[in-house]
Length: 311
Length: 298
Image 1 (cartoon, helix red, strand yellow):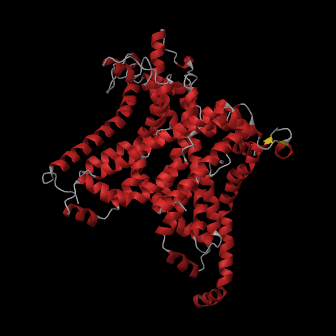
Image 2 (cartoon, chains in turn orange, blue; image 1 turned 180 degrees about the horizontal axis):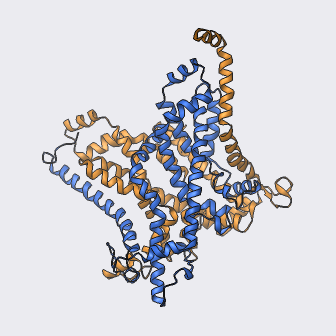
Image 3 (tube, chains in turn brown, blue; image 1 turned 60 degrees about the vertical axis):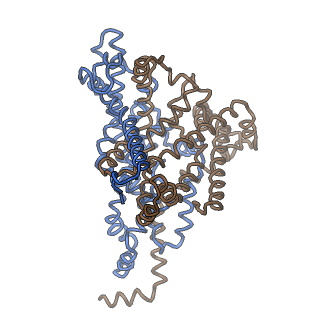
């Protein structure tokens, strides 16, 4: 029996590959349909940005307005403020949340005691699992002007209570540093993994040469994990304008709206809440395009300068 | 590798001390809010609002939790969240495997083009409004499926799964199975799924956590109070301060009412985070593993 089978199958290798191929198509059909419906059709829906969309006339029947909404978005004073807010918040976030996890990983790598290392890791990863709603809720509770523990502690050392959520000057710091609190441990994992791969011989050689710990970090560890660092940097630069809607929206109030309104929250309010589809799609497209272009540029630069790139 | 502290130079000793000081500071800064929230949730409401609770609970009481479990909204939201998490995560896993497996096989002729099609969606998207229009045209608005189908798969997680299948399941297995007349379908069920258990554990965690924590889809697509997940209820209670005072029946004076409100908030925070934080220590090693597999791709 077995001999027969081999005889039947081997000469028809081409046919078999073909039959395997259609089965793969069947298997991937569902994910493919999903990607088309929920990623590619919305991409086609971007055309709404160029038309005066009315639900009555539908997607194909609405009047074509060309670049009207882009001009409108890029010329009004309030949108300029929103674009500025988006960039500042994104850049500030990158400046804090990119290097500190690397420092954390390097520091953890210097620790000899496994027990100590494990406990620090365990605690630093935990906030990553807290939902953003809960995180913002925690901040509001703990920073409440009258009953919040932080103001209680501040007043015990003689500092007047601070209205953290009501002060527009504090908003960006709150956003960025609470991100750090939540994500530093998680972001450090990838560097910890990379550092574990640094060859012990290199370090031994550096010790022989009398390099101090700090020098070993600068001249051995960092160069070894540089490719990882660059890849993460490229990805995060692409995300500068992609400020997550979730957290900013929750932290917003009428007092800090001037600095807290970013493109994604604006798109939500103008598009979904007020039903101004064309204009808000244009604003959203502007954000997607800027972030895509940023990603491509940073990727190309890094390809030239550091010979590391995403593609 | 690690050199004896005693034998190091003074500079190195100072450096090590600085490292420990830094890490202990990080440890405390991250730990303190977590402990404080739990302590506050178990304390007497007056002690909480007057700032007597600093680290450990003061006048331990379960009043806050009693109020939480009497709140119908929270209970309904909790049930909904569990439903969305369980059904959603199962769908996520099925879709991810169905997508990652063909893309991991070199026998699948067009795999690179198809993979590029998926990867592109990671970097560019139609945006909020066009996606909303699609969901609305599919008549999913205000349906429970709107919480499940639009986020049926994460491309990033799919790539992690594919990387695992390429690197950890030996190629020879496929050839051997093929010799025995095993079709790609059978191979998926009999070989890929059983051998991918470690990565499926990682992805269950990733998907489960993001399902449990998501609130944006509910805000966009659901209007019906009875279908809202816990996160939306939390948003109303914690952020917008909308509390159903009829739930706090046994409260008399205004001052006491304010205290109970605060206590209810702390207890709600704990209740909402417990399901995830309870499983966390058990799955921590998988969680780290997932990040590393993802990094291999980089």
